[in-house]
Length: 150
Figure 1 (cartoon, helix red, strand yellow):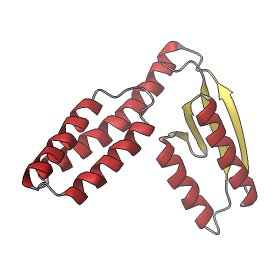
Figure 2 (cartoon, helix red, strand yellow):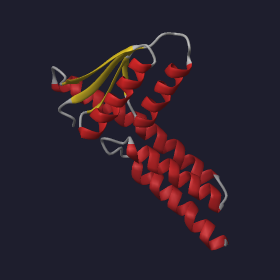
Figure 3 (tube, rainbow, N blue to C red):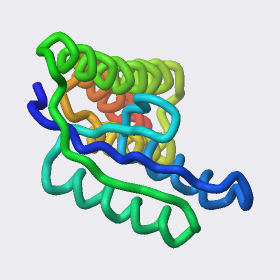
Figure 4 (tube, rainbow, N blue to C red):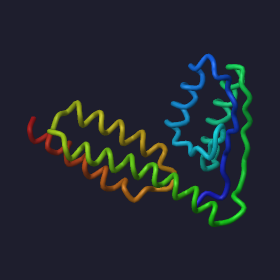
């Protein structure tokens, strides 16, 4: 469980919308947990803190306001709830990937794309989702079928 969390508090102008969309996409790629409007969290470590600091700089350059905070939940239950929310997010992604791998025919391009997707999900799986192993098995089963067909 994460003891500390890196938080990004931000506000961006509504127009132009491009910086808002770019920020949202980058936060999604990182697996940031939306706590409220303009407040996201990641488990605190050197990498996540640095990523949020870079994003804060981009928000400032786009004419917005942003600050990065390091915080700890006031109770263990709150900390567990954050971990559970993040784990459920990555678990849902793993389940979707596994279902896709199981429903596809064996093609090398498909396997390569699914492996890239699996790697991207792993990068934001901060707490080791229980769905990870099933997704890995599904992708590798598809890969084995692709190799056998070749």
